Amino acid sequence: MPNAPTCNLGILVSGRGSNMLAVIRSIERGKIKGAKVRIVISDRRDARALEEAKKHGIEAVWIDPAGAPSRVEYEQKLLSALRKSGVTPERGLVLLAGFMRLLSPAFVDAFRGRMMNIHPSLLPSFPGLKAQEQALDYGVKASGCTVHFVVPEVDSGPIILQIAVKVVEGDTPELLSGRILRQEHRIYPLAVKLFVEGRLKIEGRKVVTARK
Ligand code: GRF
Image 1 (tube, helix red, strand yellow):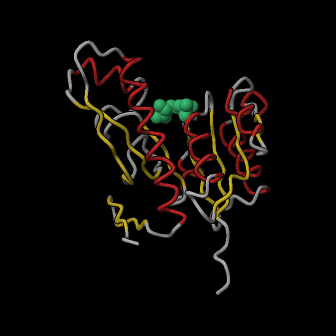
Image 2: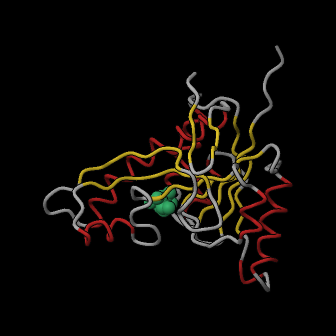
């Protein structure tokens, strides 16, 4: 039987890149088969993720938002870099991994069903920035993280995977963030694996996961 074509991944980052690394390592260790990270793109020159990606032999580029007069033109640059690396709406998967820019509906639509994000709360609770702080301020006893498909509305797309993390007495945003992050590193690679294996089906708001 001929091998299934490789799924080309493009990862958009702005900072440290620990989720990006979790995905890269899962591929390197053979836990995700049939996928390759083709490009990592940052909107910030100083993103640690760029250096980390290069250490793994992955093309890593800074695309400066200041070099594009408008969001549309900036996103054109993103699209063209992704395409050049084989990350297309037909063969690709785009991962947002701590990417701090809002994407336009046109960009999101281009990769509808082929773009994921990870968020450090149990969505739909606490979307947006500082989700862990929001959870602590609200007084919830459990928070967690969510991997979801990206839709134009922020942190609102169909949910692929979630995992709960207990809030404990004396928690600070840093402590809770650290415990949530460890779970992020488990579910983001797993969501990618399910996608690459063709096991995720979007049905309206829901994602149905096929058994192996
Ligand atoms: C993570 O907490 C993720 O949930 C959020 O941004 C953070 C990125 O961290 N979207 P890292 O760059 O992957 O280490």
